[in-house]
Image (tube, rainbow, N blue to C red; front, side, top):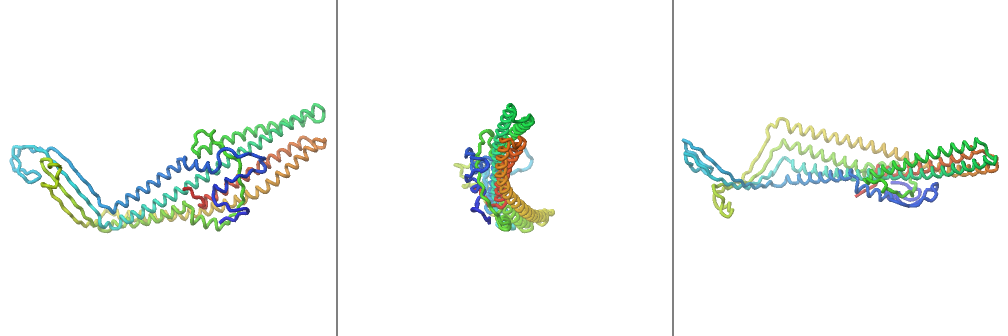
Length: 448
């Protein structure tokens, strides 16, 4: 369970899509695609989900095939041909036991056959096959859910990375505007003798540096847009315009609750659990090779030189049989023993995979909890720093205006303020991404 300082965040997306503006961003409006819209688009369009869905359908088909092991096989054959007998010194007989001419002859042959076979007992192979296929289908279903959770978390990361880059570009544009104002002011003061040439040079350097920073920020916007468009499977990335408003709802997750919930509900762990049960059924199925097979079959055969009148194959020239059988493979060249050993090895491998996945899950959750706590502290510190930097810039501007300060002090104050605003954006985005990753890592999200 999660303890919230404001209110509980019950879902990976719902808790992130509420509208709230960054205090440091100053009034960016809601526009473009929201976070939950991006997740829905990705789940509908991303090929990874399509692959997982097809794997699930394959597992369902395999289950249907194993259910068929309880049913009889039924077949119908019909074939015709031309039979030719050459000259012979001995008496020959046709398929019905009738003598044929010694000098040879030929005739048409027509055959109709209906047959069925059923295994009444196959050593438990059919039952084990159904159990195994059912567990593999359940494993594929959990894997599909995990792929959806994983994709949703990746979309959230890409979404907030793009929001981050856009907001940083706005901060950099604001810094460039301030640098241009400083340059214009210092040049004007130089003309009236109230500023030195060194002040102008410092202002020009600051202006050039902020221009370079804005170029890099705009490039980051395009790169993160491309990353998000790839996950959404939108080939024209220009169509990807996101809502830059964000929600910060501080949570205080409990480590033991998160780990316990993850071990019981995380889809990839549940998938591995189903895989273990499937491999155990495979062991039972492999052992069936040591047991006898009991079954029965039915066969009906009609054969003549002429086609039956009105296709009535049940009037004459027919035979039928019902047979029961017991089959025991006394020596199969160690095939069954090898299959049993392989099945047991697969069972142990599945158990080891689950244990390793549990260890990885616990490690991941603890790491994410550390990241959440760190991001929360960074938000608090960076927010305070913004307020202090704004006050420092105000005092530096005032000192420079009355001639008690230098342009360098003003530039330093502006750089500090720009960095503080960027730190707030970085911390908030990192926090939201970490919370999203935690929700995925614990299996709290369900995407049906």
